[in-house]
Amino acid sequence: MSVHGPHDHSSKKIGALILGALGVVFGDIGTSPLYALKVSIEASGAHEGNEIVQAVFGILSLITWALILVVTVKYVLIIMRADNRGEGGVFALTALVSKGVEKNPTAKWAVMIAGALGAALFFGDSMITPAISVLSAVEGLKVLSPDLEKYILIISIVLITGLFAIEKYGTSIIGKVFGPIMLTWFLALGLFGFLEIIQNPTVLAALNPLEGIQFMLGHPGVAIAIMGSVVLSVTGGEALYADMGHFGLKPIQRAWLFVVFPMLLLNYFGQGALLIRDPAAIDNPFFRLAPEALLIPMLFLAAAATIIASQAVISGAFSIAGQAVQLGYIPRLRIKHTSDEEMGQVYISKINILLYVGVIGLILGFQTSERLASAYGISVTGAMAVDTILAGFFMIYMRNWNKWVFMPLFAFFFLVDCAFLGANLFKFFEGGWLPVAVAAVALLVMISWVSGRDRLLQARWSAAVPIADFLNRIKANPPHRIDGTAIFMVPHQGIAPRSLEHNLKHNKVLHQRVVLMSLESVHTPYVDEKDRFDVKHLECDVHSVHARYGYMEEPNVMRAVAMLRAREFHHLHLAEISFFVGKEKVLAKNSSSLLTTGFIFMHRTMQSATEFYRIPFDHAIEIGGHVEI
Image (cartoon, rainbow, N blue to C red; front, side, top):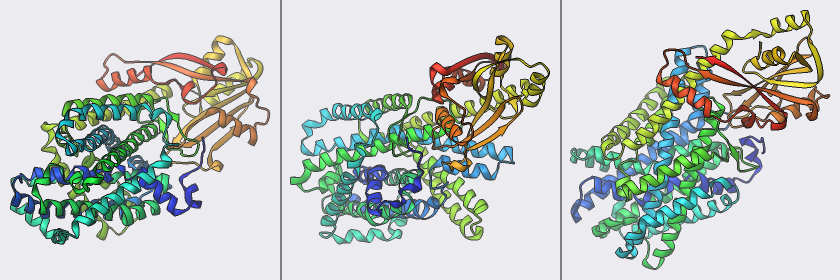
């Protein structure tokens, strides 16, 4: 696996990066035209010709300005400047803000919960996006023939099953074709929309924001339902920020401003022009927009685009889960890196299984994209609100942006997020409860783990022997020293680990050379090699090594040993090294809470430190003990 950071892409051509971004970043928002306008018009209650025509102008105006304000201005032009050494996403923001409030425990906990909430909402979104995207694409079969409707669920389940089955192989190979396919998709969106617009250019009046405002004021009874559906047009906007580390700021900005945004507008307005000409096309305005001779190719292209969109969201869930492991938000999981070039391309089997079961359950439970749209939106708008809060705090109080300008601006963005979120909350009992339940479970898991881990560390400290006291003891009563090097994995520097104490107590020996190694995941995505290690040479041939890793990097003990050997431990030889790893059994005290019980269960079932840090099994010795929390 490469340890190259995101800025290694700077030497590549900007065009290749833009093409790659089209294939990875814009799949979700790029497939929204399949259903967003149709669902929004239906939410307005428009059924007849004149009602649909009136709704077209108002809703097109709302979609246009949602794309401008939420995606273009908020994310592309402002929030994407809040990068953590080139990386974006909710955990990048959380790490940035956490560094600024380290001395305030209450504020630090508040930031941690906000980050955990944003990540939990993303997991809820990760289930809904594949289901609604694939269903909406396959539903185009009804345009060919109503008799094909009975096959929609079967084909959707087959496509989803195939998608999740190949996840373990990664996207490094098939990813090379994602960009050209999505470029073809966006060009087709724009072309078909443009051909319809030139036949009915009056639809361009919807560019006026007053059209949307007047429509909402004229339909107060359904305004909330309309807002809850319009938000479907901006779902996936947060992916522009989350995937910034793979392609960089400028390629994503240019791809959006010069390709994706104009093509989406052309398609939405083309659908609107079609509905003005033929309101009966409301049954599926997206596929009705395509020329009849190209309908079948468009069906295949739509299926490919939705598979790519689903792949991007699923991979994003793997990446978020991997970052959560490194930052200590969730227990250790088996993480498989599927690319030698891209650090963020990982596969986590447990997450894959959970997502697959959830997506299939959604398809079978809701059966149509129109019904599933009711469940869509709460998780997305909630995650966007969290981004706005964290980014606003970071930009104004840590980057020192002009508060008189940007505080009102971020307040406006937050009000827009709250308007969308509030509108979607009214769909709670129609299916919106599902992403909320998924997010609640994920948030409970993260809070249980973080709080339990803190109590475990406190318990370790309370029973720990300072390393200075340990060294004084072995100087006073020198134990028998045996050949070789013992590396003890320790949670903190400055203490003698329990595994070292137990080894000396029961085996009555100490290796000739002892290395106390601790690994820390820091709040930056990557760590410069010059800052990787802190090495202290103590007495009695005992050495302290503190290794740092970014949350986008993989802690690997054997690679760390190789680096140490090259730098100053020239006498280290793998054949002579024994790794001692503590394997504690955590017990609850008499009065244990639900959070404590959950933490103990996760601690007992998580991946072992030996596997997680890739320590060779034939060189690892796990020593147990009991800790009460």
